[in-house]
Length: 285
Image: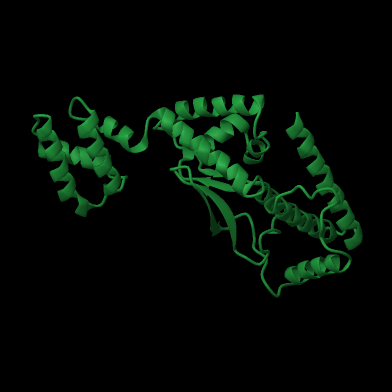
């Protein structure tokens, strides 16, 4: 809420207090306003409306907060829904930011890394066990309000780019990169954020960029950067992820003078095929 919301808030809280035969001091009203200031007035207004219908006594701040955010079980389930939606829409190659940092910390505690979470089977015993562990861990961490958790989870692309020291995916000439955003309400969108400090964007016209474009152009002339046969079951997003990784591997090997364009392309294709087969074997267990 903003300071200009205070008069309306004051009036609403006073009316509710009268319904419970209470008279609020200015200090107590100010205390409630400050405690709820992180929320929009529309959210607070709805919670106050529910409070007068469901509370037997004048609601404490904690009760109003629960009416806004939901119960601990509700919040844990929303966290899981958002996290799993990010798995299916963003994938393991893209980094993730969580509006609710507890979601990111829960993933780290239960799965260690974002790519490891993305490798969780979509159904079955392991999925169900990890789902329950996620909910339990989230509820425990959410109670530790004094702790501050990191809200960022690194995907495969950023991890590899950091190791190589430059950007090789999602537009090599850009100073930003796409990041999946898990909102506090469980929705998932894609946003563009500045590159991490340890990564340097490739600048158009430099020797490095010219070399990169030349490598990719040579690779294209020797055949499309396609995946091996038998991968027709992939979604467009999965194929794009593999395509981007293939480009990165080609540039890495040729830039390091380890192989010719042809050899680098063949090695990259073998690497992609091996990783894909490994993923399928893991998913079938």
